[in-house]
Amino acid sequence: MPCKIPNCTTLKVHGHGLCMHHYHIWRKETERRTCSHPGCTEKIKARELCSMHYARLTSNGSPDVVKCPPNGSGIAFLREAAKATHNDCIVWPYAISKNGYCEAYLNGKRLRGHRIVCELAHGPKPEDKQMVAHWCGNHSCLNPNHLRWATFKENSDDNRRLGVKMGRKPYGHSAAKSRL
Image (cartoon, rainbow, N blue to C red; front, side, top):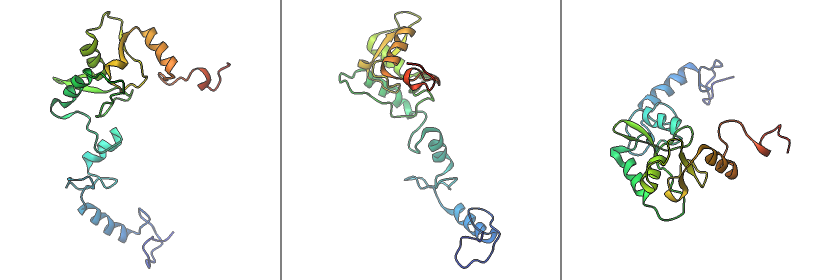
């Protein structure tokens, strides 16, 4: 396969469909380019982004999403969410955990956002074995009207009713080998 540069007769391809000569020219030009994210002047690492924006893209799905909210704005967002009176889902604007829950940091300690909002809106946990249940089935929702204290069984029943899949094992008609 020849080099993809027009009029180049070199048959041996090194990388990106280019011969060694054109690959080195491309590489030097790439090193001079800066991140395509607005306002960033760092050198690019991959996908036209610098290392910071590329890391955000790969871990959070967007170069704009910040893992840790800046200057306590995450806690301020949670306090405002706890005062909500409408019935629409309030979605966490920052990065979420692998399980789909929002995470906020207070004094270096990682906290789950839905627990903070539930405590602010409905008071502390009534019993030690209770957890926060989402009426809407959206794990990243922080609307206090969608959150309540519930037992594990009540939460599991809600998830089943809403069709929320917990873990990796499907159940009911979603399971390939189920007999209904």
